[in-house]
Image (tube, rainbow, N blue to C red; front, side):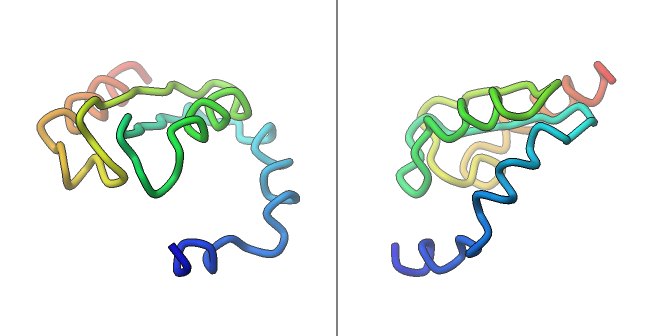
Length: 83
């Protein structure tokens, strides 16, 4: 947990304020059982980033691409095909 706290940059608020300026389609994939970063952050990101798509993976923690690749890859392919 301490390592996680240390990766938060001192200008985090400034960076978060720039999320609204992201102007490319953005896929957010979040594990519903993420114990590292609360899943509510996924919802907040989706609300903050215009043109974003949030997809949840159940029975998955912090690293969906490693924990549930069979669920993650189709989401990525579907997103890319929609562009």
